[in-house]
Amino acid sequence: MVRVVLVAVATLAGAAAAGLAGSAREFSSSPLEAQQARYGRVQEARRHQGRAIDALFAAAGVQYPAAVMLRAFKQEEELELWAESRATGRWVKVARYPIAAASGDLGPKRRRWDRQVPEGFYRIDGFNGASRYHLSLHVDYPNASDRILGNRRHPGNNIFIHGDEVSSGCIAVGDRAIEQLYLVVLDGTAAGREVPVEIFPCRFSSPECARRLAALSRRKPRLAEFWANLREGFETFARDGGPPVVTVDPSGRYLFGPESVTMRYLVP
Image 1 (cartoon, rainbow, N blue to C red):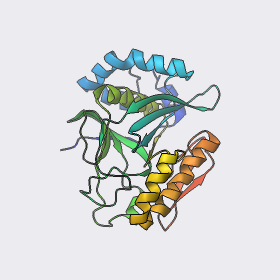
Image 2: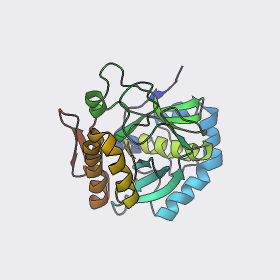
Image 3: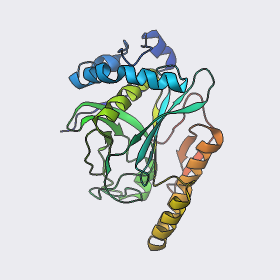
């Protein structure tokens, strides 16, 4: 059985009152952190990775904990960690991790058991400190777009970013990387900020990406429209320097608005 702690994002004021840690080496006094501190693996992650995380954020010039987001690129097999600087309001790339395993091909997940890694705009909504893959972060697939465009009865579920180096529809990054990501996302969530996850087939700014998507779209024309929609979000981030507000229209298409201070991702 998968044991996932689902989270509701607190307000920043409430998080401050809880006495949040200023270092990845410490647990804050928030209820979520207290619950996670019961897991031996999470405690070990603090001991093993806390200093390294502090160094990453110091090098990026970002105060810890911070609002963070994850961006994954399937073809390049990379996952990026971004964080918002409270001093400047700018989003900064803090770290880049190789994806150790991700099953399937380029393209969205549309049904259960297709072994596809989703593509689209998501959030981290749960933590599993006793995962069979060391530690795991639950991605809120299927979102509103997936429920419209995917199999209505069996769209699939249980999509994670996790440790180890095996995958069946999830993103595996290895144990060291998931320890760092787990703590950063946990501390950011406890600080009152939801954590967006963007999953793209490839970097749309790359010529190789354009060639690969064009070739695949010739066999599956519907993918061209879907990827053009994802590219809008990719370019919105590049233009605005941070995650946009993401909503979904009745056709399942993503819509992108300007960045909001209080809520960046509205995709249910």
